[in-house]
Amino acid sequence: MKISKIFLYDELSVPELKVDELCKFIQNTFSVPVEKRKNIFSLANEDTAHKLASCRIFNTKKPFESHSPARKEIEFELASFYDSKKTENIVMYDGFEFQRIVSELVSDYEATLDKLHIVFTNKLTCTYDDSDYRYHGRAVICSNPAIISTTGIVEAPAKPRGYYLEIISNVVQGVNVDTLKKKYQGTYLEYNDKRFSTISEGYLLQAIFYYLTGEAFCDSRECRLNNAHWQSDLLYSQLEIGRLCEKHQKALEQLVALT
Image (cartoon, rainbow, N blue to C red; front, side, top):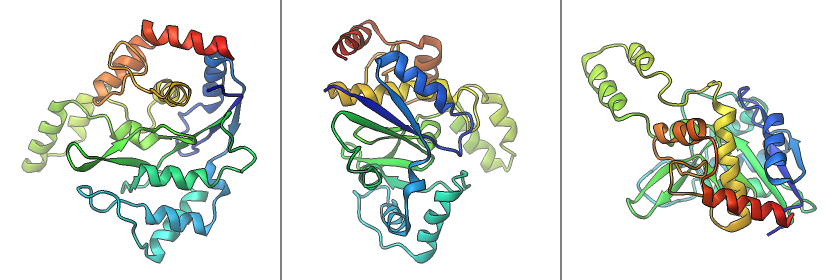
């Protein structure tokens, strides 16, 4: 698969996401022209809002069931098109349904196999796992368009085990958890984290590698294609290592040679 151009869609609710620099990162890595686009939902309307509200997840232990949204849910989605600030209550969306809806916003002229669209969104995309019969948050849905959930980057990889144990203990005891969060600060990615853009590079690599090769992830923590299930692994692979493993570096060089 040869890509002639990549379109990268911004997410204004995450100012730490330096999309201009990410465009340069992609272009320098893959030697492919990259065009920055504004938020994909700036092209949306009430019909899109209805479809998004319909793919919300309410039962995390059952496969996807289309939801008949209330008017207030549709209005919530409509409002998010114009003000995409993160809300306190995280809404879960079926990732594959979400990707299908987003694909309808891409013009037919640009929806060709040689053009890859990568969309950043603050909406939490999830997929149902048949191995444990429940939904899991996902940071990336690899396809075209590919979806990278900024909320998923924060919420999907698990925080340190000790963090959860102490949170439960403090809540039971009625202790304020802010002090605990400060104790673990830096061991996981947070919203408005200055490390956000660098870590997003790894998810861009995963989305592009998948589209070019059919494989997105690497089992090794020593590679930026590692599909991190823990925040500690995410920070290690993307920040401490910050490069591809030998196998995938060679694969990248072969891909670039074909462009």
